[in-house]
Length: 106
Image 1 (spheres, helix red, strand yellow):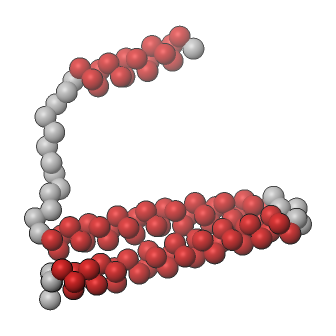
Image 2 (cartoon, helix red, strand yellow):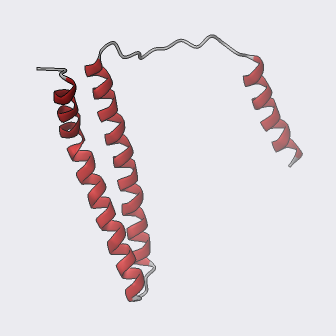
């Protein structure tokens, strides 16, 4: 336990004492790029949540043991995952609509 505390404190103090200048690598230069970045974030978040809901649904289904309530909860999780996949698939369309509203792009 003491070794773990020492290792954690070493990591925390070294990162705090070694403050370096932050260099921004990706900076949006246009509204089009900002909206594209938003689309990418939406798709990534929805994709991740979808995988989580699929996993929860499968675990509930496996451990249901014939319980109708648990089977229904598993199906609900799968429906939520389907909505997540649908949202991730529609994210580019939603961003294109925003681009049309803002007046960016062709």
